[in-house]
Image 1 (cartoon, protein in one colour):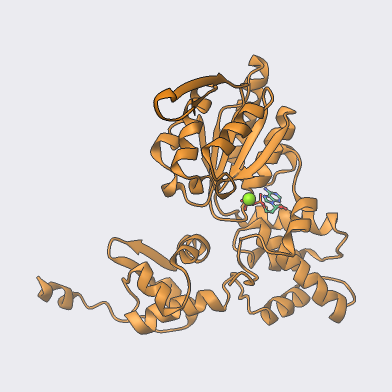
Image 2: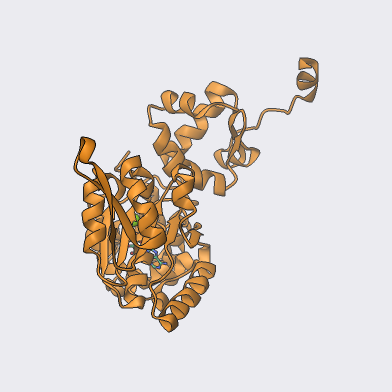
Length: 342
Ligand SMILES: Nc1ncnc2c1ncn2[C@@H]1O[C@H](COP(=O)(O)OP(=O)(O)O)[C@@H](O)[C@H]1O
Ligand SMILES: [Mg+2]
């Protein structure tokens, strides 16, 4: 699964590329226009007041630019940034030590913030609200709590799972932004930009072909671009044309809208084993030997966005659109069946 070429999750070969291709300022950040507009205003206002930026929560599927935005915010605010993640902060003491070391105006970026454990998270509440950490010293009868003032700072949290961020934590963010899949135009601009930066010779039709198959996700686009470049190098004189992109991506079994065999397997098993659904996520997970969490984070968001899958109260349902894409005749809707049930 981690090797899926169309997964938005960072893979081994990505980190170096992610770093070089990561836009450094808001003006280089393509797409997500509403978020960018809002952030520009927040940045200008904070600068005018000489205050740190509001605490900001970014959420959305992997690979859409959450980490990138956080580093851009630090650049734009000319602030240092400390980068960590939910699972990396194991004890309350670790959190206290991070918070008390922050410099004035520093940005603390916590990736996968939904995975903070409760005691660690609770330290954050007063830190975010009043720039104070409450800390128990001594044990037993001598135990008392101490309030340590800390420097004003900005917390930026990122998560793929908004629903798993506790509400007391959520409520303490001044701004909350949901990143969406990028539209085609933005994806084309992103692929073009990456090709230019990495000196890849390409025709616009080749770029469009890669953009179309990248599931609205910049990280996937950059990865596919790399794979197509390799193919072009070996087979086509280094030049990415439409045909070369199509051939390379077909070899990788990524279809013309970015679905791969795993997506097709998921849809097919709901269709074949569960008559198209509705069927519960855990049942699907078992039937394709995949973790439910991976299905929810990686497979589903794009399938739902494409209108191939619906989340209903009774479970997941494959839509008629998916049948059409897979070239399968959809079952006839049997309304009398439904009626006789009641
Ligand atoms: N708006 C954007 N414009 C151009 N490239 C982007 C944009 N957003 C993300 N990227 C590219 O995609 C890669 C993955 O983005 P990242 O911020 O690491 O995603 P996330 O943290 O949401 O998983 C980045 O390294 C960058 O190269
Ligand atoms: Mg990230």
